[in-house]
Amino acid sequence: MTDLQILNATILDGTGAPAYSSDVTVDDGRITVIGQAAPARRTIDAAGLVLAPGFIDMHAHSDLQILANPDHTAKVSQGVTLEVLGQDGLSFAPIDEPTRQAVRRQIAGWNGEPDDFDFSWDSVQGYLDRLDQGIACNAAYLVPQGTLRMMVVGTENRPATDAELAEMKRLLAEGLEQGALGMSSGLTYTPGMFATTDELVELCTVVARYGGYYSPHQRSYGKGALDAYAEMIDVAKRSGCALHLTHATMNFAPNRGRGVDLLALIDDGLAQGVDITTDTYPYLPGATTLAAILPSWTAEGGPDALLARLQNPRDRERIAHELEEVGTDGCHGCVTDWNTIEIGGVKNPDLAGAVGKTVAELAAESGKPPSWVYFDLLIRDNLATTIIQHVGHEENVRTIMQHSTHTGGSDAILVGGKPHPRAWGTFPRYLAHYVRELGVLELADCAHHLTGRPARRLGLTDRGLIREGYHADLVLFDPATVKDAATFAEPRRQAEGIPWVIVGGVPVIENGKRTDALPGRAIRRTANGAP
Image 1: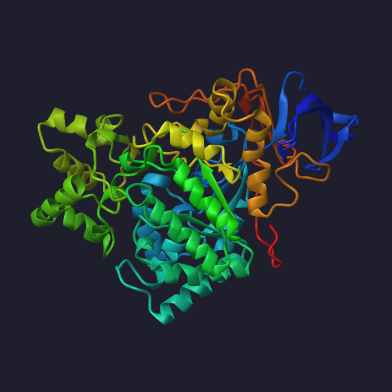
Image 2 (image 1 turned 90 degrees about the vertical axis):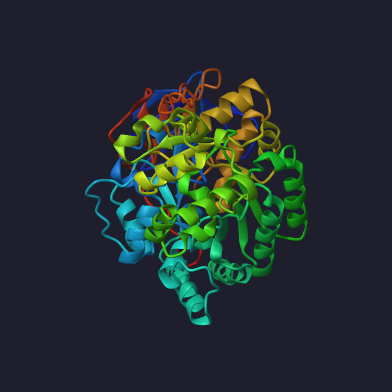
């Protein structure tokens, strides 16, 4: 007797090929037979449902939440069976204790600050070992360049010395040897943004040596977006490193209709032999922390220095001028429009009334200038406030998602009173809105974007496709009813039309309900470079 039969399924195998009908047998966590199913202890009748490989979230911010709240229904209920952590250059491995405390404060809005959380690791291996104790879905990890810089250089805006660069390269190599699949950067976040192009090239040379890839949050997605993309392609070309342009958007007013310009830049890089892939989320607004839109000079010296500047009258005047009249590097070179900055979550319960309102609305209610309201929120919430930033353009979203390099990534923040609905809706939204309703993508092609193509970027040779011998990470959905139910008003609503999600042969969603199974494990790069 095998473990599981899936009968009468319409199979999208993850390659982009047309669907076909068949049965699938799963045993010991792997697909053993495609064809006439072998006798099994359990049977699922999949008539009317599509069977696809589990979805791969190429940009996730679940680094702590996947451990603190192992239920992880937001992700697995969408069909996600693997997510890539360590994004945007700031995470928790490798790390030392002073850096851990600083990073916790800086990205509390991304991860929350779980009570009595056991930070019992300081290395990539230690973090991956924690994941292996049992999680809802599988997880891979990228070494965060900003965390490396904070540990070695600090938070000052200056070039790294030769000795400091050598130490960052050593720590990066160690993390890759311990299982990380590559490196991320957050080049609008301190202190990662202080790295020069040459420093990034040196680090990416190490990543290339281990067969990994570079996943940068680049220096601008606004006024300087195309120049920022060009810099990342140059880094990849000079270092020989594979490049994954994560949340590859063209946002803010200067970029309306310029998605085609980004794709032309990518196509030129591909023609020159640069290995490039992308990911996007299928929404217009973005999400980040409220502090992220500040000019970078305010963050030199760390969170306490930043809070002191926010309370200094002369600094406040300078910051307000840069935000409202000049444009800051934190806001991607664009002048801040307070009507686009919606509060998504707060740590201080006294500020709960601000959630769901824009800074402009809060200013109108209080009779204070928007910049004063902004500073007050940052100070009272100890920099932990998250925002939804309404700056996207639909034509760019549709254009970019049709490119041959495209994969799916949620960029999802799971914490806060009103998180972005992409935390619960990214993958079903692709299937419902952009496939069924708009026809921007064909269903088989979309499945390829979300499964086989990202698996290839990660170097996975036994995941991401429905093939005999492959890991049984699978999703069953109804193509006629699958739908993202999460909205900006109600962002934590579970997707519809996804009755079964299976990780390693074990159901984590069964008849639409979360089971108590935790079959997920860390995906590690081995010594020969293969995950």
